[in-house]
Length: 556
Image (cartoon, rainbow, N blue to C red):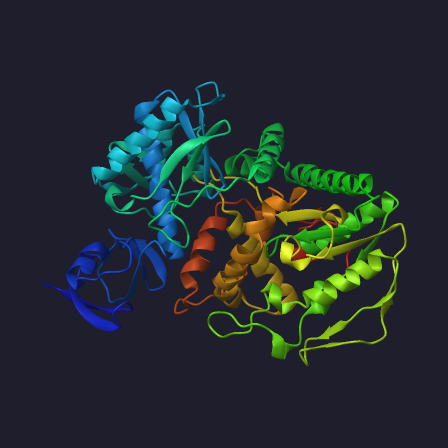
């Protein structure tokens, strides 16, 4: 019997195993236990399912749902379970997974005519019950590689997934089958339904909300949060894409190949301009009491360019926007709080001198002149250089930053004097009926490109620090997003086709021995499905210019 040696990172030991042994079998041989059931492993820094077999020496690190790769596997498997349940309980309907909202996945059911079927309480409960039966039966989820031509034949040439496979030029494609129901989900799934035991399904607007495990406590379903404003923003984007007949990635690719890419750019940018003008008009209508505009959003959402474009529109409404940077109100570095790892925590609201910030805001609103501090990031100290500010009756103070919507930032400012805006790339375009594009991936690709061209950071370093960025967002941004007076979707559904050409060379530089290699390869595979789009016709004021360069705005 031929044997191979694997390096198991979980145990820190070298193990001799039989060649051809699967990852699942190896985990059993080792008696390996993680906090939650093992779902897969990183093999030489690339994610693989438990059915993956080893024939050569490898470095292996098993993971559970607490790892990003494990969570993605888990959620894909839940989608397949709902897909199978729908095929059995409501065979006349087609499942469509649309958006991440309210800590779950918003799904719709459509009839043969393409119209949405609003499920009744009875139908929703029947689907949930069938999912639970599939889970309790511990049914295998079988992965097979089949010729792409066979997959296209089974799906039908007009199906979005079939079109995407054809556009991509695949020779073979992976198909996952559960209880006789097959689907293509563009990624690895868990080996059987027994481990997918935390979920729920409830009615939600015209569809259903598939509830998934909580990020911090995966043994529990994430509690649903009311996100009506976000949902409304998603539906607005869907309406535009339906109007443009660009609902999914295959539609976008077709439009680009046929030469309509620049028309899509023009329409998407026109929508942004209209929305920003509308927001400026909303502020102008409240100018008798609104004195402060607070802008917040996650990393790489385009907040800076948005605030500059909003300022232009506010001027057209007869308002004089005055920018005030929160960064100048950092406490001295010796007073900066530390996180749970003992590192300086610049993301915490306590890192800001909230008292001084509010006192100066109130003084400005009262017509007084104040001396604005300047933060010396080299010394880590706040300084004063004589810069003074006074506002008049036409002025409105504009503040952009992580804590824009955090109540603790402006506790002394009356609520009537504030106007809050949440900026984020909330909705772009989905792969097909079952696979959506994560807004987090959209933002990460934006940041990889921007960090390289403006900050000299390579893709590896940007990917490495991304989990830390995400933790800060969970703590200080997402918890307050529904408090906004208005949400602005900064995503343009064409943008990944433009970012592709800039991001791919950067991702290819991540070496195989890097811990970030697997994530880089995942993003590369994801981008490979997009037809490239020349961004030369993107306006110089576009939010996307903040990331690809060529903006007419000054970011110093």
